[in-house]
Length: 560
Image (tube, rainbow, N blue to C red; front, side, top):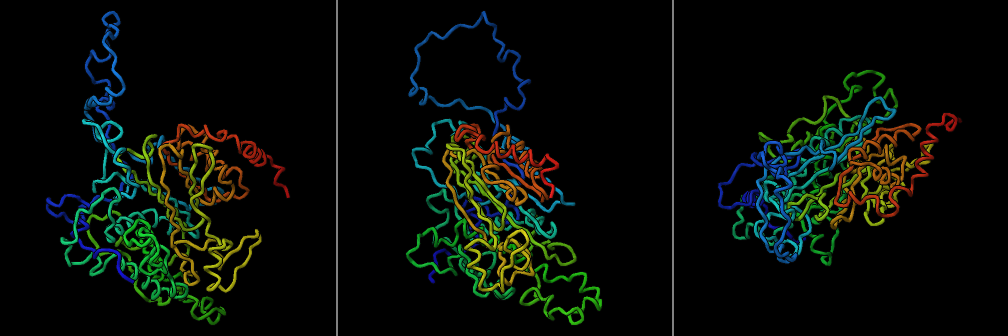
């Protein structure tokens, strides 16, 4: 297969990140990492309004006079340069901005909580759809569509926002690993693949300036990185992964030459996300396989494979159990956040896992995505049964962006029946494979050979200004008891995203017979103020939700 990408080099990566080819080349450790806040500019007057001039807004009524001059047309007003205002750069924590983001967490009836989440800004090139020139033109004195200087990331592109929900099972070790490190894998993968910004028509580095020193991983380009990772899965795990061909890896997939150029781009955002997910899963899996369980250390006769009538290779969870764990994308460096070279997990083997749903939002201008006049692009990477929903402003309907990766799904059943011995049905009528309800997840080292993979399902949505009201991200503790429309309607009745997330998690736990861990994230979009206009607001499922609440409060309703 012919290559479709330039050989990767440190020089091109640094110039793409820092955008200034004339400045001295900084070290990679100086690159800004993930932050749980976003940067914006506010007028200085809004920070301390009480410290202004004593006569500010205190003109006596008898000294005021009505306007008597000729009125100007809107065209004349548009040509007038905007008055510059002193602004101050502020950092606003996303998790504390209740009018923009909210998180609801409940452990339900479980003794502990295994669900985690993450929210912040991630350092990577923008992937939003470019606006026409007529829409990006600004008047003299204006800095952006909001009429003032707006914040950008250190790469020069508008900030990329990152939201993730992780539903752990068998413990919280894997979900905490994803919460603390998955965004780091995405940042590192974007740098390794030399991902370019979609907002720039020409690259900052031409072909003649590319050197031959290779990328951070050595003499490898984007396509070599894909082939290397697939080879590592095949050699380390085996089984299903011996013929593994990820969908968003054009270097190894069965894409023909008639496919669109965007599909064959080896440095696209889809390829970067798929690589980050699979690399994080491989690192976690190999790290756990190199450890031992309590039973293996005890050397008890009860745990002996022969005496316990168990297979001799029962403890051999991978193809080569003694293979050392590869716990980093590149050589360890100081100042890394998160530290991908740090040991993964505890001292004992963790056989559980976690599902994951990640949403990245990028804008073509520095105006934030929650502004009513700002378009944006939403990328969703999903593995498992966590769900991401959009609420459409025009009709109020819920638009699901993910599907549950269960054995009864036609796509998953076709993918796995060649490797799994059989699917079983539990007492609730749900199909399971090897005792697992999810066919895609991180961890679960005992079922990796059967095909339990973290290969993400990736969805891209271009959001028009105020086209959608908000984004909802929930775990199966919420989506397992409520329909998609009920989830959206509960959030519509809240005044802020923070209140909507808390009400959603609380309502799911209230109406569930055996409440699982419930996690709900609500992210405000441009149409938030119009969330109750289309489709009758939240009245479509109100009667059904009231009936659910009444049944939950009635002690006789659940009597057997």
